[in-house]
Each structure stands twice: as structure tokens, then as C-alpha cells.
Image 1: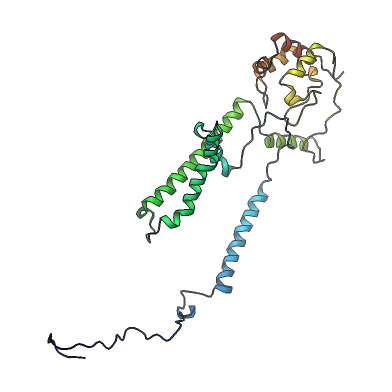
Image 2: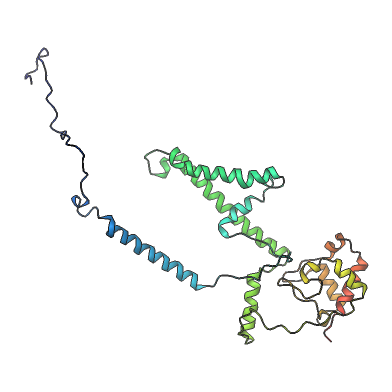
Length: 296
């Protein structure tokens, strides 16, 4: 190598001593080369993960055993009073599908149920490829942070609105959710000393139908009452039996229930019966006939 600072001297580079000469496959340093900063994956790290997983599982089991899952009545396809609701984590999508621009026509339903959720899910899948920056602070990643906050706020808002709408619908229709109604029946049965586990006190034998040839019975067969109380008046899990109803209510009281509804679970049925084709006289005859339904 030439010495000095003359510009016309020939300079020969013989190599850089800072660069290690290659000798084939380079093996990275073992974790033991960094004491206190790393550990072997199996069994040390994996055992820690298993221990954390077990603690989380035990916590979930404790929460599950604290309160039994709410159970309603067996499924009844004839029960038109029930309001079907999805699980809480689907409430936001359930509320979204109620809006007019994603419901109504087949095209709007397809857009609301397939296209828009597909775009959101596709954006989530493409996020690692679209946001390739090395910055990890959320305020330095405006696009990714904005997408996250908008999605989070939308899900929370739709979930809250869906639940509020559900509670309002229960109030307007005087409906008590089945799992609450059944739980109350089980508590009453427990107080009464019924330990059969049937979820309610033992029901007495149903009374016979009185005056089946009465015009009021013909009107009842056409009324909306049949959908819940059944044609034989035996009722359903969502509605009580009407056999023996005359022992509890007079004709005027029954007419008042038809016009104004009764809590829990029964909404006003007078206008619905008029729309179904019954006249005011038919409804009056039906109320009179129901008042005749007595056990003795």
C-alpha cells in the first residue's frame, strides 16, 4: 500500500480487517451467548405459555360456574311472540342489517350480508400488506389507526343501539324473555317445594272446552289468539292455557285484555283481529264464549 498524501501514488486495497472471512455456512450464536436475555424455547418458554393458558382457562371456568347459562323453553315454531336475538358479538351486524340500504330487495340484502362484511374482512386480511412501515406508535400510523378506531366505534355503537332497540321492543310488546320467565317459574316452584326439576309446578289436569258449538268458538278459531293459545286452548310455552279462563276473568275483563294487552308477553290484539277479518261483533262473541270457559 502506498504511503503519503501524493495524488499520483498508486493505492492498492488489500482488504478490510473488520469483515470476517466467510467459511461456509454461518451458524448464529446460541441463546446461551446472551445470558439473562434469552432462553431455550422447549421446555422453558413453552412451559410458561402453558402455565399462563391454564390460569386463563381456570378463570373462564370459574366465571362459567358462577352463574348457570340462561335457558328458555323448548323451541316452538308456533310461538310468534318471541323476538329472536343473536349472541352479543353479532349484535352489531344484526343491527347493521336492519338499515334500509342493506335490507328490502334481494340485491340490498346481498350487499349488506356479503359485500360490505367481505370488504371489511378483506381489509383486515390485507392490513399487514398495506401497512408495511416499521413505525409502531399508533399516532405515527394515521391510516391504520384511523381504520381501527372507526371500526371499533362503529361496532360499539351498533351493539349499543341494537340492545336498546331490543329492550324497547320488549317494552312495547309487553314481552318477558323466555329465560327470565322460566327462571322465575323455577324459583316459584322451588319455594312451593317442587323438586322434580321440571322448571315449574306440576300442572293440574286441563279443563274441558265449554260450548264448542258456540259462535264464539268459531270466531276464536279465526282469531290471532290461536297462534299462542292453540286451537284447543291448551296454550304453549309462551302463553297460558285458556281452559278455565272464565274462573279468573269476566267477559269485560277479557275484552279489555284483547284491546289493551296484558303483561307479561301479550300485546293488544283487537286491531290485529279486525285486520284479519273479524268484526267487532265476532270479537264480542269470542270474549263472551271465553268467559264461559270454567273448570266446573
